[in-house]
View 1 (cartoon, one colour):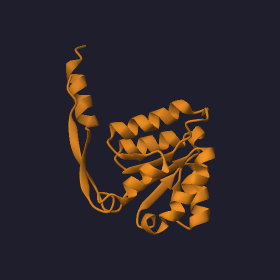
View 2: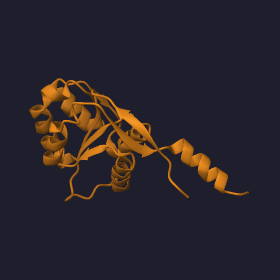
View 3: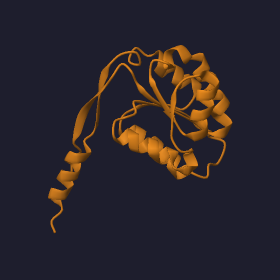
Length: 158
């Protein structure tokens, strides 16, 4: 079996998902405040509490999904699989066990599978937001789901 890929264009105005575990919410809020003038030019979305905190403290418009443990991580994963998220800024806590750890791993997996930029701490988020690619347009290669489903169906003999 071979994997079919396709090219997806990433626009100058990025769709950015903002997510943080409880003990990282202040850190993400501070990072967002530091880069508010850049982020205001992009479409922001995030999981429940994180999106609410960022919106309330920065004045930025943030589309809000469910809280992570209540399905928000899965909602973001679905958006990623539809090429509707370009960047994931996810300040996750490596020292705390999360009740929804499988959802967290699935979100990181789907982000990697769909070749989007992922930052998991302030330093990697700074690298992304200061990259020339962040302020411009570019193309990425991703899995072509429809073509791969058709190929798999053809290979399965009933």
